[in-house]
Length: 187
Image (cartoon, rainbow, N blue to C red):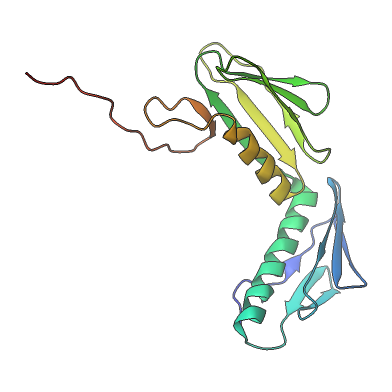
């Protein structure tokens, strides 16, 4: 039995789930509504504020699907109840981010031009005020874990941290591998 797949997904207060035709699980909560199509071989049951998953055989394909869909539905439940948050830090002189309107970000990252990124409606961006001596931080929130991670990866791709000084866009708390710089040649 899959260690992940056999665990039931508990529904917190304020979150409801329903099973739609075609083996689609729909989860609704205070922060939004998400749905996930589950493989037809996996049996989904909703009872006593819990979502349970079962597989027909011990084939490798069924075992992997069992844990996968349980994890995806669990992430949906956590997302609609609490939201997922990713914080990114802009390290570098003059590196800035500004929120223009509801879902348009403008980045100044040392290029000759500014970079603008239109966010999906499901992702909420916040740019807290920067105190002197601190790096600007971008906070991305969404109920969809996959979507907020994809947007964060896109933002990071604009200027990845370089290994010598660490300049670029990094996740808050991320440990970067640093390299030693050039040394003077001995004569």
